[in-house]
Image (cartoon, rainbow, N blue to C red):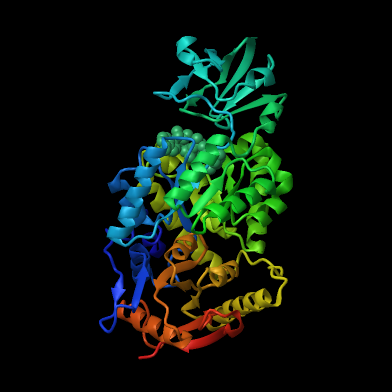
Length: 534
Ligand SMILES: Nc1ncnc2c1ncn2[C@@H]1O[C@H](COP(=O)(O)OP(=O)(O)OP(=O)(O)O)[C@@H](O)[C@H]1O
Ligand SMILES: CC(=O)C(=O)O
Ligand SMILES: [K+]
Ligand SMILES: [Mg+2]
């Protein structure tokens, strides 16, 4: 079968080389592109280069320098660090490793820090516990070692008041279920109903008659005092994104954004995680307030009925696209690959559904953090995304009506310009759209249009380049800008030709809103149709 080749699970890129391009004429003519992206573009051609971005949660089985490099080579665009696990020192070390690899190997892997949030979880365990039907465990708010061999600590003191005899305790959304048999002061005695594995710091939800109990639990702050310390750590580490766990409403996002505005000396984008029962009625305001959104299906599936998860996912994805917010679909995409080297057919179908919905990014959780095959899981995401995107383009799936966003004339012009550029590029079968952008604003608008060809975004800011890694279809480049916008286009053609990334005669649509000087009055916005000169 001719397709077999494209659908294989092997890596497209061999170990990357540093490929910052320097023009002999002057040191200013410098173009930097992620070495893995350059290779993908060279080998697959523009049209077949993957548009959906890949995020990997880094944990014990993916934190070595070798595995981080393999993940980057296989297509990881963003690394996620989950502050539920590991110490700040550990996370600092991983961030340093990723930065070193970016520097030495020419990657541009962006960094996301994910807050712990006030979820209720078990204490740290040295070993996962295999819970068998009928066994009794004591969930306690005391030090479990003082209670006995079958005791497990719980992070939230009021849980002993919240639960009653007969309630269910659900571990990690259903990995294990227990029933409360008796309460004795700080200890709650439970019997295993559904057997399975209890992992270290596993999430706990409590149910009565099938419904989630949200007594005191729902009064916990979304950002705890520990989370604020982790946020200060994120600022010091200059991460690209902070993902906020268990968001309930827009308030916490607004609060965090103003904190970051006043404290951080770079832009850190705030990602709202939709995983709390309480977030569901407030999705519209949450999407509006956030820079990006994650459908965190692991916890979401424990907080709302499982059969409601797909429609919430769809709603969030569509809303985000309409408002131009990047959207990530996370967790259980390749759950079986935690243990096995190949995915189930149902998992491939799930990934394909996310890609058809045209979400910006796919995120691995346990598969890359603790799984036996993090590199293979990334290969599967890459192969499935690439193949399904091609199919979506052929069949014209996933077209949605995009409402007008900007309500100021300036914004309207940018938005219309991008919509027209995207339509023109589709109708003319352009090889790429080039956009020159300082803050990434125009690249975002273009990504929202989901054009058939890739968007090459040229920015002079390294941190904008990193953030654009999350945007669907955007291939970020760092370019030293010339004062004259026309010179930027010529410079790009020259440098890309030298890399063999474009050929003379290629048709590209060029969008620019770079100001020749810093005064707003002189902004020149344009769309041009250009052929790469000989
Ligand atoms: N830094 C880490 N150190 C140790 N184990 C980790 C780390 N990160 C993740 N893990 C393990 O990988 C599993 C899956 O990771 P994941 O980030 O999905 O965590 P989680 O505990 O389910 O929380 P969340 O809801 O925030 O995703 C975790 O349950 C944990 O066992
Ligand atoms: C990613 C995450 O937090 C979840 O799926 O619950
Ligand atoms: K988390
Ligand atoms: Mg979660």
